[in-house]
Length: 370
Image 1 (cartoon, rainbow, N blue to C red):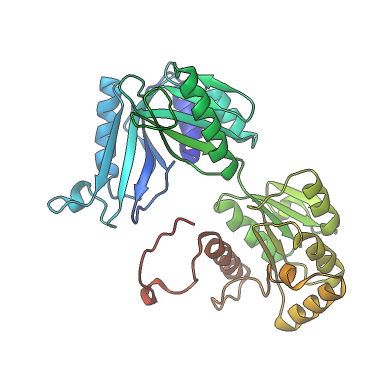
Image 2 (spheres, helix red, strand yellow):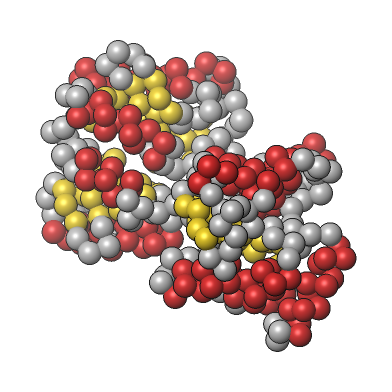
């Protein structure tokens, strides 16, 4: 829902009741993950997507019906023999979509949720999607408090504990309990939409390739920081897509960010400096932090020299094995923009377990759970 949150808040604040469809569960080769959302405004405008086009028409009509009736609906969409292309998923997957009407009365915490997301603070929204009496009830969960209208204390406690676990893992998903929140049993299903802070992409080296990497990283949803020790190159005008442009020695900046708890296992580091006095001290720090990805640009000769220097600095074989160098996949890239695509492709492949091969040469599932 993150990609429609601003528009949803704007319309709700204006007094509008908005139909919202949210993917709450997926099976097989579903095109979009849990949390993907589509809103339908009172004027018929559509923002977002739940399936990449397969069932949007059906969800659109259902959303308008739900707004008119005020009754939320949990609907399953999948391939059917007689109607696959009309309302089914042509990819062969199955998705459960929860469709509700959102307005000021039903979601009074929406402005606060939006403020937390904009401030990069973690918050989760837990919505009851199956129950005999509570469908549509909501619990907003922060690391240290909750707010909402789920009536059972037992259910609130169970949902809050589990939602915090999903939030810490950066995952959205459906939780199931007994009808009063019992840990065992059925009757209560709650979808938790996690708004964890976006992962960070730290780009070291304020060169032309860095501008392309920053642009593509922002497009992929990363909070991008460009860092270089040279103030003449590290300027806001050269990197308009970065959330931050920092003038500092790379290794000093990364060490300070790690000490402050500002990097984690999702953080991506790209080292584009080509200069041993910058990249060797930086990689000494980065390769010991357990980050999601550490890649360094350079020729194979540069790579061999860099690895030799890092070994002399005391890095172990296991630590050096974390280094993606030369950076990127073999796409034959030449321009900064093509190189950025190559780097992004490697990051995506490692994140989701892809092999980086052409799909036409592979068998099995296209989408991986990670």
